[in-house]
Image (cartoon, rainbow, N blue to C red; front, side):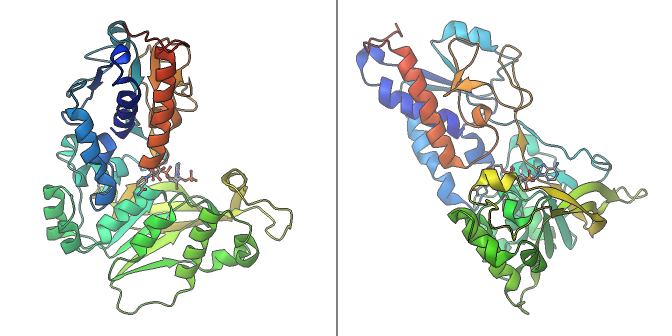
Length: 406
Ligand code: NAP
């Protein structure tokens, strides 16, 4: 995926031309084809992001680079075998698994699906063959409010002629064209709007879809003392909160047939469904509120660390049920260890490393989501891959600059 290919590009640039350090890079991949999340994660209508495939293809065409698809590391080949065969091995296998809600009903009902399988389905991942989804219904509920949730909402609410002009899988497009009747999508976050995990660009894009009205409950802006609080936020967060405020205070458009609702302060309690038909019917939530004196002039809100420290409490034991005929769990990905010889920090869900060099295992490096956790966009992967590649370059040449590769 992108982490591996950016690392390769940097290694070729810095070690590839000098005859004394001329390197070969072999890339092993579980799937038959390359590009990982760029091919199978990035939404099909985000062609600008997918364009990076062109530069990755050039990298794979380089005679110093080999690609081996359909190889399952940890099963077909072990890390220790690779370490015996290469000067260095870089783990760039991203986040294979996903988080679970661990609430009653999560494994019981049809039309309760995970974001991972939904995204795989519309991106045509071979493993998603056989994915079952009923879109002949009006209301969808997405639990979790990151950018993946916004991607999914956009696919559900966009006109089909717009989707036809994207990279969406042919099978998914046909099903959407024939069956999609979703008119209302609720995206539900457990924390408040100051902690929204999605970003402005993605929300703005969603709010611009023809015939879709974006709604938020305006009263939550009073609760955070909006006028006072917004001025304390750092710029990216401030612009996002201002934009949400503009959506909340905008008057309703009578022509909009579809609606997207952003709901905050709701911790999932149970997935609900019919005991007879086994069809999902919604979810119940425990309501939260900020336990913070927003009027306090000393309250610090100027960075993400302070925002993450904002305390939440039960909102007087209140609960709420949200009805839906399609429920999607979209609460982030999870890293797993693919070979027992890899040092792995289970608590943090990452491979312990120093600037990309794996701690406690000579010759082993890591990059991308397995290095820092399943957060961030492709641009973050670039700087991260460069850091790891830089570490490799300095470890593979001695202080005098002589190659240790021979
Ligand atoms: P994410 O950004 O980590 O968001 C996960 C969401 O799920 C958060 O709202 C989180 O709430 C919530 N959540 C986690 N555990 C939960 C639980 N047990 N109960 C209820 N809610 C829970 O994950 P993501 O959306 O999968 O995205 C992964 C990364 O890819 C992100 O960095 C994202 O920005 C990036 N991405 C970017 C784009 C783009 O740029 N267009 C598109 C897709 C993905 P808390 O915040 O309270 O934990």
